[in-house]
Length: 119
Image (cartoon, rainbow, N blue to C red; front, side, top):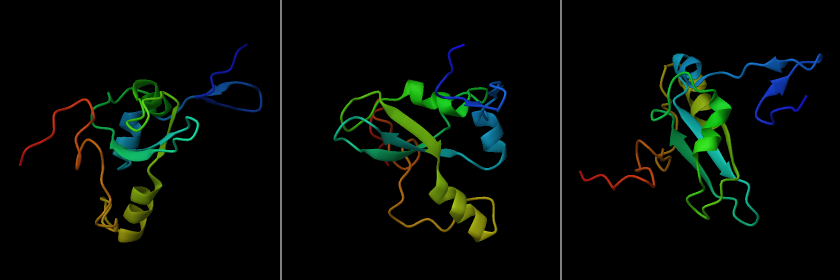
């Protein structure tokens, strides 16, 4: 049996269902950290998960992305730990303790496939 590299497995080899975007939204997670693994690129970004359906498995976001730096599809998606820690330490539901330079694609910045927003 071939294993899916985007899934976790228990000791008996059974697939562990990944969290869905909807289940993470219920926990207050609305962003994801994306990293390009293409050779000599190393580009990273934080994206909004608003454009993805709630029933999509979180790891499968990577299948729909391309690096805006080099164009490669070798991207990895992880939980946005900066927003998670800011939310945990602020004592409220939203990420309050983030630095002013923190920008989220899809909220603060347009997606590369969208026209720039005008104020």
